[in-house]
Length: 496
Image 1 (cartoon, rainbow, N blue to C red):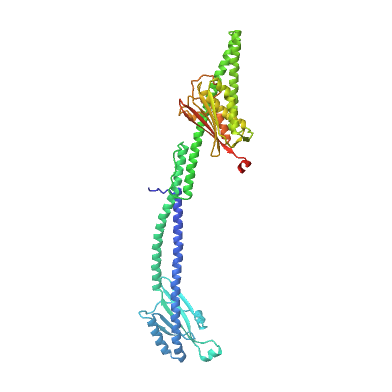
Image 2 (cartoon, rainbow, N blue to C red):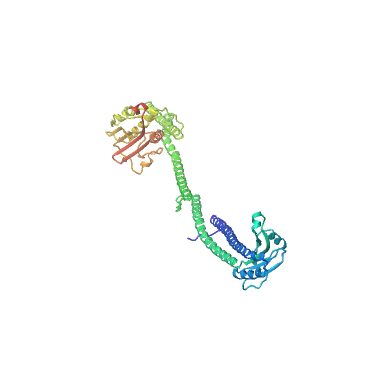
């Protein structure tokens, strides 16, 4: 897919930055490469010319010593022709006696020695200089012609300088070679810049596209769409960033969903509390008005007062349950932690619930494993959990039904299971039975008052004990509630 380049976008900035770096790098590399190549060829040419000048000076030294200047001129002409370079010969008084030109050269602009430079050479120094420009491209080497006699060698005196020679050679071939190398360097630089530009384009696109996708996903988040996710094919930090972004979106989606759920629960709570309070308050108000108006006989008065008391107790239990559930959820409840025996806890709860089961002719059964680890928790709160589950089972189990309490250990867990053969719970209601004031049988009478918060309180207590509670049910066959709590092994028990 073609990526549109906007100069102000991240993609445009990245691409421009890469291209600027590439161009600057190529220019610097090309400059230094050309400089080094030019220096190498000039140095090689200078070394070659110095070597030839030494050979020429050595050949002319004997003729200088004999004073045969005609032979000096002939030899210089021969060497200039064979070596293809211009040779000039000077006497110690700076008089030029020979100018030998190579073949096909008639003279013209050339590099020469100035007055002071000849003096430097006459002192025994070797000098080289070059002229490199549009009009002239030559290199010159000046060298003294010396004769060292045997007496001078023995006495350690410096050799006698008999003259000066200069050799000139053109740099045309070198400049052509350097120009060709410069062109190749330029073409290679252009090709490398194009390839690097393509790579820079790909790199900038791989960096900017995920960021653009994140921007698009963030805009969708603002609109309330939490389904947008980012897929990054590259590895490294961008993949980690995309994964973190997707995880953040998931968390935001969960948070928003939870807030909506809590908002709905709050709305339902107000409605449910109003509904739960309205019936007993209406009953209390009705009976109280009847008694004040004198419509109640003495025989009915006690029965009416009993109804008012029952409704008052129901409201009191409802308020206490709400306060307790609120305290549990806010974490303001203090627990008395200690070791708890599961068998004793289950037996105590079963014994407490027995009178209510007897009233409905419900058979209570139990099975406690022989070897059970201890629990670490608040015994009274765990007892409250079992009582709530057993009372809930009695509520939904018909007369002559059966309720079982099973305690067993498995995988470092202590499991309490309350099983009944009552009416069961529809599958659609199972996720909601832990909600406040949720009632599976919405048409049942008011005989079972204050039972809309028991399961919610039980679940909070189990969670605060680092456990979990599960439920399975089949309509018409009964339900099974299981409480899984972590087992506690005292140090002395571990040693055994």
